Length: 504
Image (cartoon, rainbow, N blue to C red; front, side, top):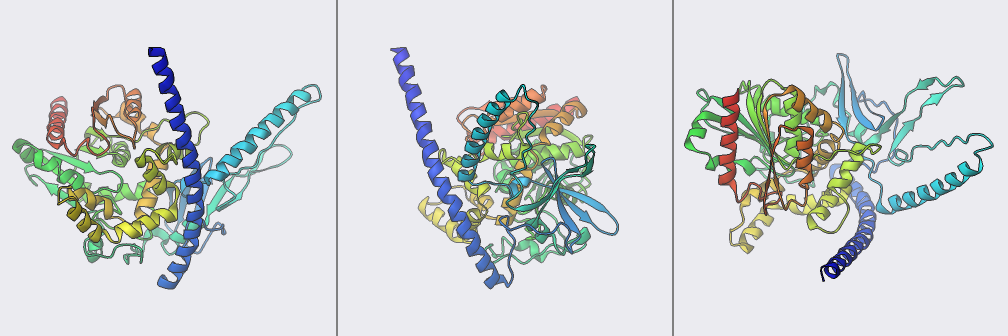
């Protein structure tokens, strides 16, 4: 009976996967066409509403160097913005997933062709073993759609004359007029972004800094704690859950800083920003560490915020007293895989089930569909919030809606690609530095039922940093790891901070 039950279960699982794969192929093939149509639609709308053609990542290639003095250079799969001015040369890394997202049909066709080529080459190799060597040179199939590539040229002696680099026109266009970083960010919201007072409050200030919610004594605080939220969230994720549940002793001992990341919540949402790792870190330093003279601090971070937390810890190794990571998106990249593309497929697998994977795939793979979602929901978030409150009779915690709605498509799109996908090759290095150069405690929390970032990610962190303490929370997911157990989590944080202070 046990054997029969296992067989039935295996058949059902296989059937379910087959149905999911088939439906996903059909749905995402249709979405590929829809995104192309929306690309044309938005180009026309942008031209008539904003009086100029707006660049997107479907744009054709252009020359390498523009009047802005900035170019995109891509070598060995790593893309950088080269910013030239009379005083400095700056490299600003961007993810190639912004402009390399092949359609599902293209990928299937390419896999089929590659397999046929492999079989043919195997046959040729077998038949030519006694007749000499066969050299096969494959041209790159990854760069010819959206950017211009100049290839390595070799002379007869085999010495390289020039290196490979690629140029993406969209990024060049977005960077025009920003030479040397001397000009301030564009403050006027685009027609498809929300222009309400809450979303544009940052435009009224001459100082460009993140929105920071701070609590605790300013002068008598013994220690500092920095809270970093995840993707399409805000500082309210912490201030509405953890802050109210900390003990009186903690509130008098620690100075708490919860930030809205660049492009989210009440923080600046510049329309010309590429939301790179450097920009995010610079804004955190400029908004919290420098003005508040923070010399040492604990870090608590969720999801995407974990990547920024690790980068910040590596940049300030002597300042971090403890590192608490919730659902860190760490996917070790197998040998031979390109890091950015591998992580994009793990985070956004282009499957209709589970729903959270479908949502992630829409946000990550489709520039114009995701812009449409932002246009419908984020631009009209006040109406959506009212309807949600009405339908749920005000039972839903509205701070989650605030974090979800209050961002721009430009901020979400670039942050998703440049931080989650773009840092894929860096996370190994960051974790190695934390393991070898930092002495701080590392604590990792993960929800057992998290369908967005699998539990294996936290176990991967443990494998990389053996001293890390990993706690898997039963029956909790990506959000309820905090929301719904905020009192217990606040108590856990206090214990972590006390232990770190005692050890130091």
